[in-house]
Image 1 (cartoon, rainbow, N blue to C red):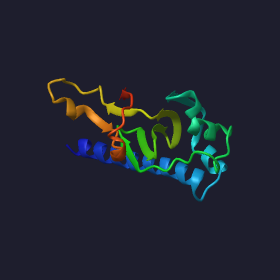
Image 2 (spheres, helix red, strand yellow; image 1 turned 180 degrees about the vertical axis):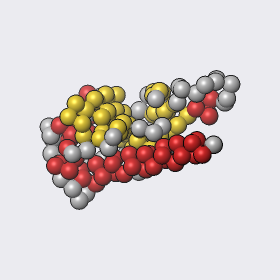
Image 3 (tube, rainbow, N blue to C red; image 1 turned 90 degrees about the vertical axis):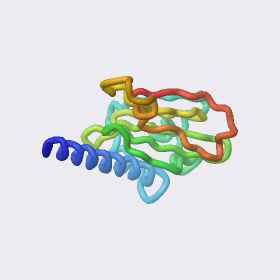
Image 4 (tube, rainbow, N blue to C red; image 1 turned 45 degrees about the vertical axis):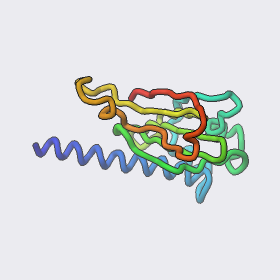
Length: 160
């Protein structure tokens, strides 16, 4: 029993640390930091995936230095949540733009980035041992942009 409690506590600590790393990334991009601070948080072989119109690859353009992070589209998360241990999800919306960023953090370094633009997202844990539980029990996270509920956006399910 003590081993289970210790594992849960370690898992929670890791989630808190991973969330803090992603928060530092956003603050470095649009707050008190610099791109130098950002590059220290990213793996040199960062894996990237994008869903949305090609002209909306905003965050990846910022991360690669293609566009100046102090100009253009500004990502200000309204919600940042750690889920499933290694994953941190940030969500934001401004006017007609809605976005979700899914970051994978391993050993204090961001190794994967998934960018969803104007797409509703549901994140599910497919490692549940049984499908007997209700469907809601395996949902880690879902989009909650309250002021965009009247819009029709494509939806995706991300399995982690």
